[in-house]
Image (cartoon, one colour):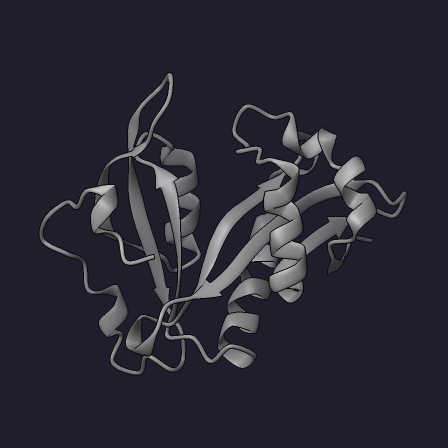
Length: 175
């Protein structure tokens, strides 16, 4: 049986089976440590019965006023454990914490515009394409991103997910 729990410091030495996948964004150690210290309840891991890491969610809360929201920095599942509903479980956990603990208006995430598999998955989870961010991903393979959002209970009128009618540049992002 799969269990979910908060990410522990030692997990940083145990999640290579997840992070070495080409679809997974890998960050430097201080990045993970910052999330662990500031938003431990939004940094969760799915663990197999043999204690191997099946996937994890890296999230935070940010913004102000009606832009106060939960943010998905990374959600990833090891290839061996995909298509079992783990991403949905991890996303729901972040959404519930964002709503019930942080009283956020919405949850957002950024996804490569070419990653149709992930975009379709997020749409099945209730996320909408809020705006296109031109040149969001830089480096060897520059690419646009979709800023996708899902309204939470605090946003009763769903104002946070009304799509923008134009793309934006990374420097125009609020957070």
